[in-house]
Image 1 (cartoon, one colour):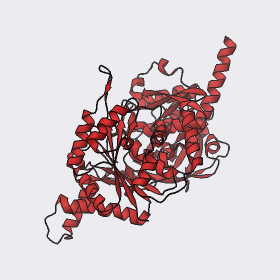
Image 2 (image 1 turned 45 degrees about the vertical axis):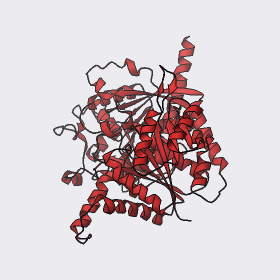
Image 3 (image 1 turned 90 degrees about the vertical axis):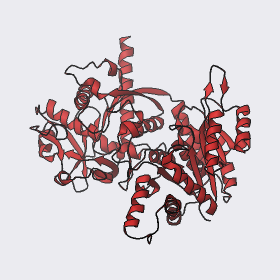
Image 4 (image 1 turned 90 degrees about the horizontal axis):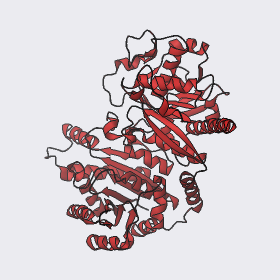
Length: 545
């Protein structure tokens, strides 16, 4: 069977959740046993997401193959429970770079290079090449941005042309505001978005409406009139407790059945065991038996998408342990003073210190790490959170008062964290960090790290430039800090632990591999430790009463 295509486009405004809709379509088809893959187009002229500001773009997601991609790839992987690759990410920067390179080589034989047909043909060739090499039953293509943007107009034109050659189903995600003053769902914005799509030569086969509540039948009928669709092909995407409910919500409305019919896919028996397991895991998010307060300490907490994978990894671990995770976002720069007010974190059960770049907020992170260590609060340090865990220990346990990372203080007497020699020669910023899947050897079987993974050799994704300076390994180890994991060649430190209480620091980003169906082991272990501590504290409080 030749590959069929689904193209997901968004109208009116960004932030409606095309990535979640795309992932839900992938999951629904996966339930039915079809081999599916996503492709994401982003119109920005960056080559990839690697150098983007998390305040503006959200987190940079990293794949096993070292690709730095849009955060929607994180959603795809979390829904599919599958590792993806960088060739599935197409950006404006990649397209124009390739076109310019070919022109310089004379590949166009003197032609005037134009958006149509040269650029659109190149887009179609890329997509067809993925289909030929991977042989998916269905390739689901998410078009980033909004219909009407200059940045994605040429890609939308390429999708129109793709439909002339292959079986394509177009899905349009739009917005239906619900005006409380008149108690009415308004369709005019969606009509405008549909008009723009029709002007681009595309008639959607399905309309998915982002709403605050269930889509009314009267609203569906009005939309059907303007979109030339049956009301069955118009579905709602209402506010839900968790994004993992959306595949089930769309399934209830028959999207999987209608897509299979539209694309004329061969009938396959749906795997109801998979559906049931997904429903059970979602149920444990919606109706948990217990609850924990977990502080997520970061430098960009005003932009929650900067820590999307950390948030989801905590939700996955909470589902696995049937526990609601109440995330307390903590901006590290609020704790920079010599005597911070810790009252806002007094009632937390665990702490996660995240990654980041730049000096701002660093001393606040170190203060909070000390606060957690001295109270034996379950702690997980990710990348920078591991590095500062070592710095805090060097300062306050080993007497190295000036200890720091050379990233933040190049004149420090004790550079506990430093650049490797080869990194000092790096000039370009994009794609030059230690990236992607890296193997790690767990060397201490009696450790929280081994308890989490239950094996000696593991692999996790990385995204960092600075490393623990082995010059200080012996000194910190002599004062009790445990070094529980190293790279395969044992040259670089990967995991450290406090000698008392649950405290793990990892140079990797385990949150990038966490999925609802296979939660990150370190996050699950953190939640288990927090549950024990919470239970112990509750018992003490009950005795006092």
